Amino acid sequence: MVAQAVQSPEPSPQIPVLLSRGIVSYNPSKGSDDGTPIVAPKLPDQHDATPSFYFRGNLTSLLPQLVPVNVDEHLLIAIDVGDICLYAGSPNCMVSKLNNISFELPTVTSLLQAHYNNNMSSCVSTLKELPTRPPIVEFGHSPTSKATVVRRVQHNTTVEIVFQNPYSSDLISNTNPMHLHGHDFFILRQGLGRYDEVTDVQAYNLVDPPLRNTALVPIYGWMAIRFVANNTGVWFLHCHMEKHVSSGMALALVVNGHTLETDSSAASGRLSKLRLSK
Image (cartoon, rainbow, N blue to C red; front, side):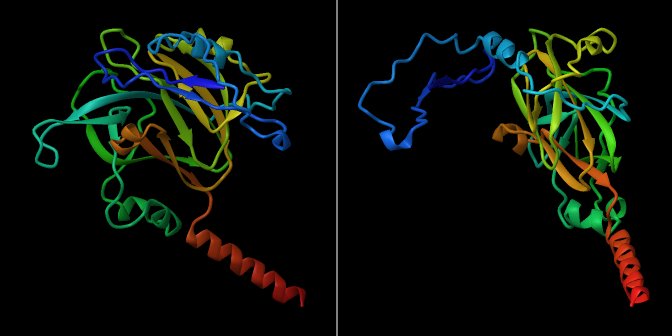
């Protein structure tokens, strides 16, 4: 097996072209190395993401899937980098962002603790709700806000997210692996250029889409995912590139349904029924 990473063209920072080679053995008793050299086939150029795009676009589930049809929450999330002026003493600090907000962790109380104490809004001073759509100026080094950005949904809500990368060749765009904790989602469609809410939805795969927890949003393109938020709690949604997640390309999905108050009430109710049964 031979693999080579794809990277964005200049002016993005360039890394050396490296190949990863390995042997996959389906019979451990025969060993994994018989001394035969691993021959590397001719691979696409490091800046050519087209083969990867079409390979992933042809992936499906082995069997038909029960894809939720009725969507309760539609989110369009623009993925980009931006500038924080005079942040932390620096005259110009570049950060990653989702819908023009760069994520930062709370400094005192964790989001999960605040959620279960049912006082997230009052306890986390930097809290901000993710907008449903990006601002009018979607991309470019526009002034960016920094906040503990969350998106709150009710338990069993069907959520559809369209991730949109910069789609103009005069802007920097990357292939971003967006990962969601606590849930799996259906990858309905990917495309190049700007997402069209009227025409692109007609081509969604609602029959046998792949089920994943990470979606590789194509360079200069978009990807649509859909899932049911059936796992209560606070779940991180972020790019899996370390540089991006550490610089703010993230948000917290808050699935309401269980707090310290509701859990205590439910426990008291179960205890009362137990006493009555005796």
